[in-house]
Amino acid sequence: MPITVTLSFQVPDYDVWKAAFLLDKTDRKEAGLHATPYRSLDDSNHVFIIGTAPSKEAFMTFFSNPELQERIKATGVVGPPDITFLEEG
Figure 1 (cartoon, rainbow, N blue to C red):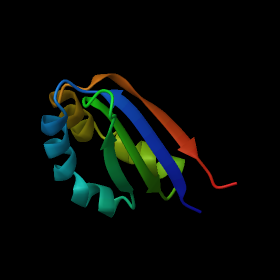
Figure 2: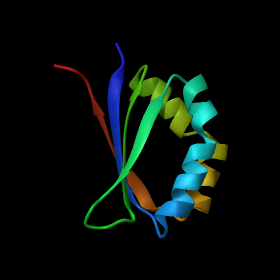
Figure 3: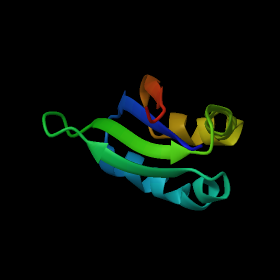
Figure 4: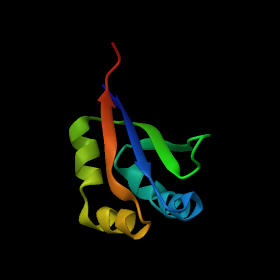
């Protein structure tokens, strides 16, 4: 059963970050992940991603990929994201 994943983090420039996020669309699809980015109305550089993954393990395998981590770092993400895993109850 798929899970829902939320991420929350700060970036210096949302538009720069979103351009990089869109480049990973094919990789996310191949991993079975679906994700939609949002930004806070009160702080346009506070990013939220809400998506689904086949499992927590599948998400962690995708997210811990060193190449992805380098791309994330290059966008200037401030600190580690707050990640929450949810299952339907």
